[in-house]
Amino acid sequence: MSKKLSNEEIKTLSLSSLGGMLEFYDFIIFVFFTKVLGQLFFPANDPFWTDISTFSAFAAGYFARPVGGIVMAHFGDKFGRKNVFMLSILLMVIPTFILGLMPTYENIGIYAPIVLILIRILQGIAIGGELPGAWVFVCEHSDPRVLGTTMGIFTSAVVSGILLGSIVTLLVNLNFTQEEIKDYAWRLPFILGGVFGIISIFLRRYLNETPVFKEIQALKQTQKIPIKEVIKSHKKGIIMSFLSTWILTGCVVITVLLMPKLLSKIFSISNVSEVTYQIVAIFFLAFGNVFIGILSDRLGFKRTNIIFASGLIIFAFLFHGCIVQNMNLNITLLFYYLMAFSAGVMIFTPLFLVKSFPPQIRYSGISFAYNISYAIFGGITPIFFAWVLNLGNYFLLGMYMIFLGSLSIVLGLIFERKH
Image 1: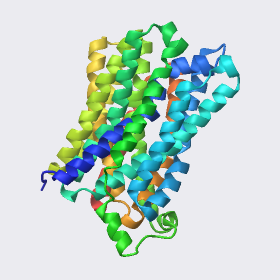
Image 2: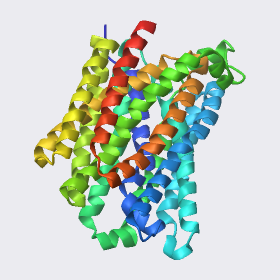
Image 3: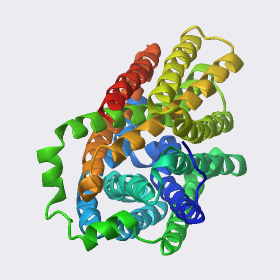
Image 4: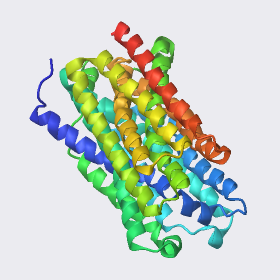
């Protein structure tokens, strides 16, 4: 039986969501400028190797996530969720500012790509603690009867960080020529990201520590080494959370971050059109998170998961079939947006994660499983995507999304039996 959100839940959710959106913008804006960053930081005669180098730099942020996630989760389980929130923002703001101001390969040679990769690593460390901590924070401030709703709204806000990045990218492309973007305008979104980070710090000053953690502290139930207890006693939870996170990576990285590049290649659309289609897809994904989260509070986890995971399978098949058959662009876009909406099934990942570990080690358990999984699958996916583009067998991406939809159904059925 669902209930309405209380005023305190609305306040906490609003501040957490807005802060998460702005911080995720900082992490993700890189992908919108991979082409120009590749030209400026990884000059090469072969465009394929330039793409591989740039996507590898993007992937470095994912590979660094476990380090930041595990370390920050340790302190989050021992000293509080809110303090780690503030630390993750600082680690994001500084590298983002640096990237907006740093010289390119033409100015400092080989040091440019090295610094770029280091920046992505620092951003990866920051985001590694951010999202698991935010899910824990929102969960522990929420009534269990509206957990799907609160998680859906928060995760939608994080996805909206990608939407914000798309809008900023669109504005840059509309107001500057490609020569101006390559010359200096590419820096503006990163400098703006630094400003967004400062706003996030300000917002989170008004958040309160979770009542669950306050109770853990009062009862002196904090663990000396939380991750040790996670690995020792919750192996099944780790495995299931690891696999569930795999689904989320495909729904985000492939569906809205990389797929517009495939549309651009197949239909030879302009940069403005590519970003516009991406904005619409992100909107559908964000809306899907909220809609599916609310519905899960009313219909239940199992039934809602089966409906929308099946939708992901069907629309992924139809969309990639249109790509392979070189169908009309409008029909292809219709199935693309329906696939993006169905990809809102990713909301079951945080719902699954927060219920898989007890409060004393919840942050560490989620962060360990989530970040290792995202490091592997989020890291190799852009490289896999570049390889598929070079190979020309685009339906491989469709088969990948169909597999993830099927995995969601299987995990949902297992989870329902356990809970």
